[in-house]
Image: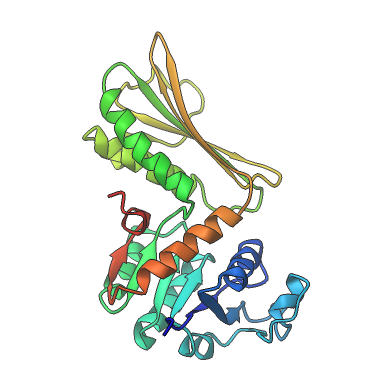
Length: 270
C-alpha cells in the first residue's frame, strides 16, 4: 500500500512565493494542497487558489489559519516574522510540522521558535534553495583554506519589495565563513560604510546590499588578497528553486516528531 500523500498548507497564498509553492505542491505526486492561507482583508480570499494558476483545484483561499492547519500535516511559511510566529504557535498546539523560509527574525523571536520546536518539528532556513545550501558548504571549505591574507566581502541583491537587509541568506553566508575562521560575526561584521572609515580591518567581514527591480536573489562572497580574488556566487533565476527545496524539507519532516532543523539536515550535508 502506498503512503498517504503529505497534506501541505501554504501561507501567503496570493503572493509571488505563495503561488510558486502552490504550483509545486499541485505538481508533486506525493503531496496534496490541504489549505491556502492569506492575510485578513486580502482581495484573494474566497477564490479557488487555482485561478492564480489558470486551473480549478477546489481549494479556496482562506484567512482561517486554525481550520487550515487542522487538516494539514505540514505548513510552509514564507511571510513576515510576526505572522510566522503566530502560525508556528498554532502548529505547536495542533501538532503540525512547519517549513519556515521567513527571514528578519530578532534574536528573541528565534529563541521563541526554538522553544516551539520542542513541541513540533520545524525546518527553518533563510534560503531553501538546494544550490545555495551547497554553496554554504563550499564557503566553509574556502574560508578554512583562505584564512590568512584575504579580505572577505558579502554582496547581495534582491527585488525592490524585500523589507529586510542584509538578506537572511547573506547573513547565513557570513555566519558560515566567520565560524570556519573562528570569529564571531556579531563582532567582525561590518554592515555600513560612509564617510572617512579608515583602512579596512583585516579581520572584518563586510556586507553590501543592493535593492532594485525584480531581482530574485543574487549572492556573492568575495575573498580578495593583494594578488588574486576568488568569488563564490549563486544567482536565482526563478523562485521555483525555493519551492522545490521547501518540498524536500517538508518530506524530511515526515519522519521527525520534534526539533529545529535546517537545510543541512534535510540534504545530509552537515
